[in-house]
Image: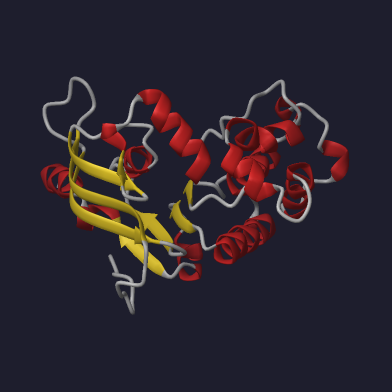
Length: 248
C-alpha cells in the first residue's frame, strides 16, 4: 500500500518529482511506466516494492536520468532530465545521485578503494563534500570500515571479491560525498541476515545524517518496517495495474 509522507509542508524540499510520466521500451506497443504524480522530499526513506515486471528498475533508471521519459517530466532538484544533454545528465547524476545498481557496476580491475572514490574523481562537488573534515580517501576508508570490509581487501581488485563484498563496496561508492539522493536497486540480495541488518544500519544512518533521500527497491518485506514510507508500485503505475489485470 502507498502511504504519503506525513506532516508535509512547504518547508520540505522536493528533490525528485514525477509528473505525467510515460515510458515504453523500444518495440513495446504500450508503456511500462505510466505515473501521474510521485514526489520524494529531502531526507525521506522510501521502500518501493511490487511483483516482478511491474517496472521497479525502470522507474529507478528514470528517476536517475539513466533513461529519459517519452512523455511527462522527471525532475531532480528542479531540473528536468529530458532538457539536459547526455553529458549534462551524466554530470548531474554523479554530482547529486548515489546509485547502487542491481549488478553493482564496479570497475573490475580497479581496487576496492578506487571504486569507492570514483564519484569524487568525476564530480568536484562530491570530492569537496567527501573531503570535509579530512580527505575523500579518509571518508572512503571510513565507509568501507562501516560496511564491514576488512582493510586487507581495500587494495584488491573489485573482481577478486565475493558478490556480497562487491555489494557493500557499491553501497560505499553511492554514499561517498553526501549525494542528495541515494537510489538502491535490491542492494541486500546477496547478504545474509546479519550482514543485511548491519548494511541497513549504515545506509539508513548515513542518509539520515546527510539528509539524503533514499529510494530503496526490494522484494524483502521483512525490512520494510525500517523505512518511513512504503510505495507499492502497481498502485501508482497504471501500466503495471493494467498488465496485472490482463494477466489475471
